[in-house]
Length: 124
Image: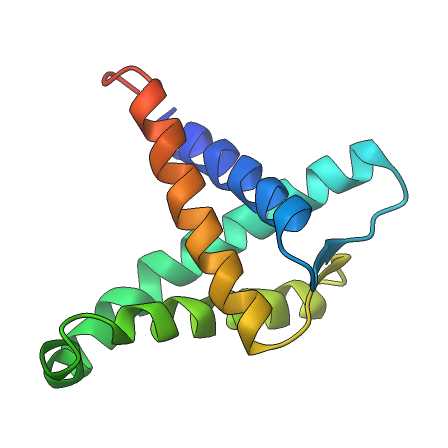
């Protein structure tokens, strides 16, 4: 159940990012198609973060220390771009138009997810 809630939270955060950040778009056939697209992209984003992010953190530990963790912003943006690329492989109508929209989109997704987590009860 927690996995489903986490995916829905990420989908909502992605939707907010599409509203706030120019260059991030979901261009489905309609609102229902966009919801399913956001859920699929949230699933991809969650899997990318769960699999690759810990590996990158271990391998790039020195860079995290040297930059006082600021490299994490770049890593998150690159993982967001990877999510866009994977979504394109699955023919999902989700687009990120370059590094800067991915950079700001990753920040928005992180902040919105955190805010939603504050509101959700702890048992989820």
